[in-house]
Length: 537
Image 1 (cartoon, rainbow, N blue to C red):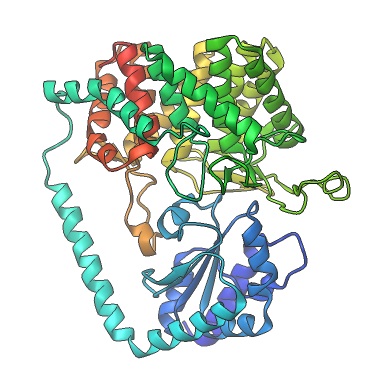
Image 2: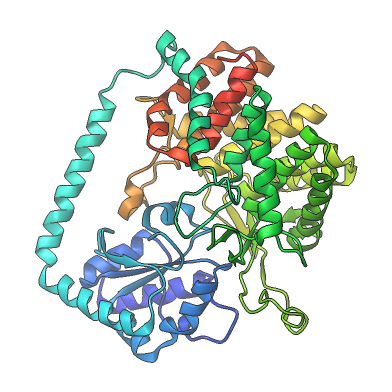
């Protein structure tokens, strides 16, 4: 490929890809962005340039700020266009890239070798610092290219050896041992001890990071499982946590909805983006708490959260939920005039399968708790939309849809959350179409994502187009746990022993992962707790 061919090709990418920038005035679009693709990496190799990867999102305040400042600086634009191959990734649309290259926040900025190895990385970078790093990394890359290439080869050889080692392990399909059964049955109690150690007795929730406080709804769900096993203080911990989130600042008292997280342990310094994923998860928790306690305060909060989702995230024309509402620090500033004089923050109308599936499950439960059939209808409508619009020809589901474009089929997270929601709907209504679609999605997982050497599922299918760190597929704990749950539920419906055996081996295979996970393994522990309660182990 000649220099002119490279330039022409990059211009064609610019026309095909829809990049999203800050809604306020900026010049970030003047950078000749490429999408994440093999051609961009080939261009970096041919031109001997490093890659500048920027991972952004439509809801992120500092992503918008970086578009308006650093990435609008004329000198920075010239240097990037001349000396780098710039790749821009939306973290919501490409969770696979985000999982491997995020630098612990948004926007994530990483300078990569042409093979996709990180040379330098950070979060929001002011203009002066960006100028320094752009110059330093470019010089270092030019002067040490052969050395870096050798290091990359050695790293890739190590990865290949690990892959070969995994492939010679004993075949995974075998009966579950007695030791494994004992370990699984003991796991929920052990997980409860982890949550008790992390629990914040002063302000509720869990202390993981000294400066950041996330709601961790999955951990709250695990506490609810333990409460049903007789640990009544676990229900008190959940209720107190929700009270503190509601009254301390994580709940938007004027417009409704939960903010994503707080920069203070008392929930008083919220970062103001509102995510469909987080609100769906909290909706599910609050519905259960309402059901368990019968307390009017939770009934009222549940109604208010449903109202926010209905009025802000629901797309009545399509019958699905939007992905998020953007952060806007000025809009949410305290004072009587801050909201009255400004437009409400932007809503990302992209449709994400996994988040719509989570919202559908939450609405199915909320409909019963609130005795509101309309919520049930909305849940079924969103599932039907996903089934009609998001099924890929190979039997998986697409991850997102935006402006009549669909992308990223086959992600394990989309498969299992969608399957779970379909099974929830089937258990309530008995519609065989929901069950048949769920079975088809899990069939795709078993055919295209299952690693038969260890019995766990990969996070996406193997593809010839994979580049950089996407060459190494991962086996995430949460999605494997959900896959096992779905298989267990299907086994209960069909009385098929092989589905149950596969599910139990997946759960057993996750045990070692869980030991190194902590609170992020709450969904796994909840799935195991539910399996124990239903006598499925």
